[in-house]
Image (cartoon, helix red, strand yellow):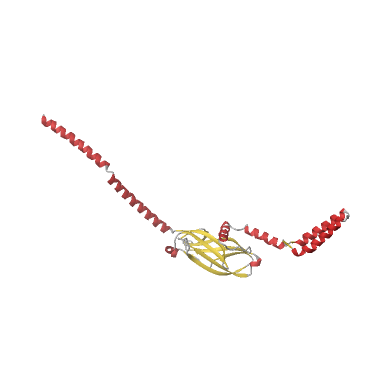
Length: 267
């Protein structure tokens, strides 16, 4: 709804005529009728009612209710960084798909905690496209940033937007197992941009591989055992109480034996 200022002039004139007629002493029923007509004309002329906009807003609010918690968090982080705010594109979901080979074949799962034992990860998003934003090609950019702010994965793809819900999966994955030594575990970021505007910023955790964790555990155990052994040796050196007690006992025994020998000799 919006105000139509171009109708103010003739509405003012019409209102003045109705006021003059009412003050001239016309019948109350006619006065009420004229006032009712004026109010109807005022509502119809001053307020431009557009039901299509209300329908679009209601659809947009219903679409936002379908957003996942990950999508809401990612959109909020993007907005704090001055990201995408167009209501025509709504981020419904965002995340990572991991792939891992085992005896049963390839296992794929969605996760927010990735391990370096996984073969690779592939980002995805789910978009809801309004009709006014559909039927056009958009440039979607996927970026994965490590804990030190260095980009480890950048992939762009041109996607034809269709009206409604769209699942968009990156064409390529970030290999993990084969490049585990070059990657560092920690908190990583996934950033999605559309036509240069930041749409969402998603956080996830990259955990070390099992072999790396086992090796670190062995190193810590060895270091702990070495420290304990050194502390025990130092304690024995600094606190030789057993040796002093033993020396004192031997000394008393030797004195007692010496006295007995002297007595026997005197006899």
